Length: 165
Image (cartoon, rainbow, N blue to C red; front, side):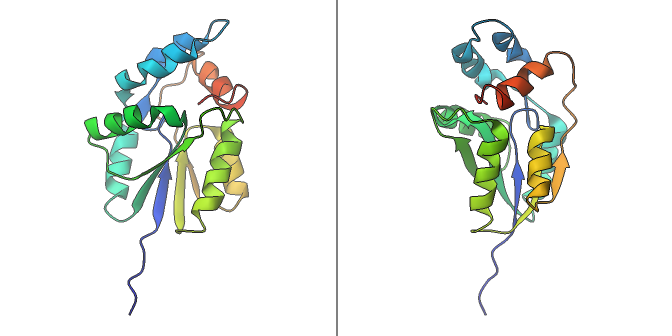
């Protein structure tokens, strides 16, 4: 009898397991300081609710991290995940130079992913990503545990309008 492959949970990074609020100030100026914003990613705090969920989910599911971060941050992102004791998993990232809105990038990854493995849940803090994933037939959970303030609109615009994270 063939062994059945475990299903996966898909977990966003920024705003779900990583607290990015300390670096949003790089994006509230013109021109935006993308180099500074991404360079500071290694100093993100951990969002405990998201980290605990990832650890719990990894006991029964494959973990797939799906982020709008550019590919050039792969080493930094992998080191950050490991440094905070987050479970190992596949890391899907935005191609360098791809400035499509996060919702388009992530939905594209999700559609390809479901051809390889059952996707039991998608967890993201971006309501547009959640809405699009739900419309595409994925079970979703809107991560609302990162405290929201006026600065968070800066992150949302970076994700959806600027296509940078």
